[in-house]
Image 1: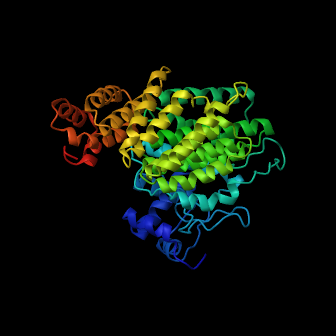
Image 2: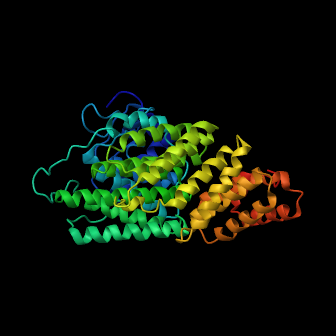
Image 3: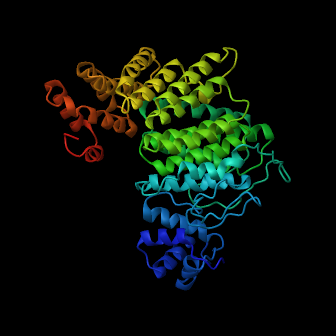
Length: 497
């Protein structure tokens, strides 16, 4: 007991609308349903948790996390409730601290549990048709401060204490967790193949349709990680976890579940680092940076990119560095820093061509091709054009180069390229061309489950206002409003927005 109020639990309790007596009764009922009929709590104990900072014993934190998740319709973890996890001395902060709300970094021996707990809660929300919303995005500077020292150092390999298949976490957490068992090389191969299937589906159709399947697979991998396997298998299993967590995060971001997405990106960075793959950890963190730019927080994205690049390690390949540079350039463009953006994109081009053909790319980098470099350059210049309209011509140039090469079925990327081109054309005072590319994007969006494409379309729609007296553009505006999901139309306001 700390003697200080648990403000994080208090805030969630206030949102729930429960009384302390109601929460006590719900805890007892939920605990019994989870196999703990002996647990009995009361109003005074709930008061001590909230007002005095008392940390309840297991399984109460898991019970409370499940209750608040269902009540609030978003994933609520034990860390979110403000209950301290014991980790390595000197490496952790009190998770109730407002400057490190996620208690980062997570201790190595906690990672499998964090993974299974979070995915299990996410699956529960999916199953019950609830919407994961309402949580706050953790600031980029907060994450950078919390992970700065941890991310730049190698993780010491932890030998299993006894048998190589000793279970680390024997008690199920009660959230659909996979029944863990040791695995071998065949299972690893099958898991890695499934990641590729999910990745292709996401690129073609967007994140909405397969997100639950990816989260479920990640939940199973968390159960597998509850055992100590031979070192080579364990490292590959952490790699699978990192790849699935990145996909789960990207799919969550794609459908607008932003706090959930950010948590998956952080899980991915931890998992990659546990597997000894620092470049993958840096790439996972760069996804969180891209998310920040998309949400209009480019300064925080730059904080994350500094950490991602510094923590990726000396073994990072030139093409991976090029990809990281393009994200940094996009953030600089959003801040109107044209000179810095051009310099960073120039470095990205140099790094991209510096990659030797005999250097095998990791599977998670094999989709960053010429067209993806051009697409990111187009996006950066289109973003800069909001500050400097002269950049629109360069955006058109790179968008066309990207579109000329889009032949591999990654429809979402093609939609983004068409929207970059259309926006650049509007800014460059070429409404005829803008109309053409806007319609190409709009015609493809109905078959894609990506909310981000609608977000980008909404950004483009703003640029149509000055051409509303053109019959063709006025018709386009009407078509956009008819096609756009209702929540996106609400964000637009009036037709003249």
